Amino acid sequence: MRSPRAWRERIRDILDAVAAIKAFTQGIAFDAFRYDANTMRAVELDFIIVDYFRMLKSELNGIEYNKSAHRRSLVELTGRTEGSVERKHQNISAVLRELLPN
Image (cartoon, rainbow, N blue to C red; front, side, top):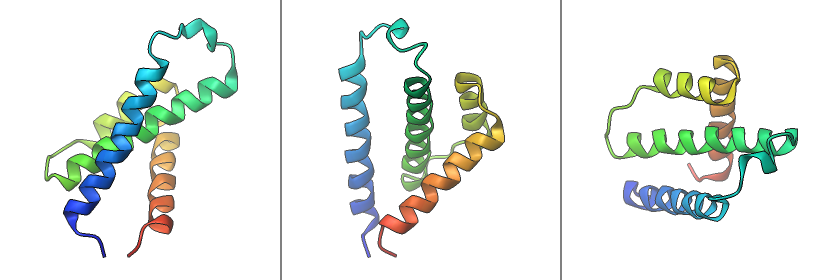
């Protein structure tokens, strides 16, 4: 079983990867993929995934956060329903349970 410190380091690595992707895509015009439904869906999912790991990072560091507020922000940002966002978060949790040791 990994120590809490090891988990924090893994989460930091993931967030660093997300930051690298963000830096890579910075400056790309939104119009370049606005009308590409697959790209827009991928961007929406990226927002949801990043938000999930931000909440997880807060939880691992003992920092309070409001999951409902996070979900509402994602609803506003993506146009998805609250139920859709919650199911995506649940799916991420399920994948992590499968991938990570007990």
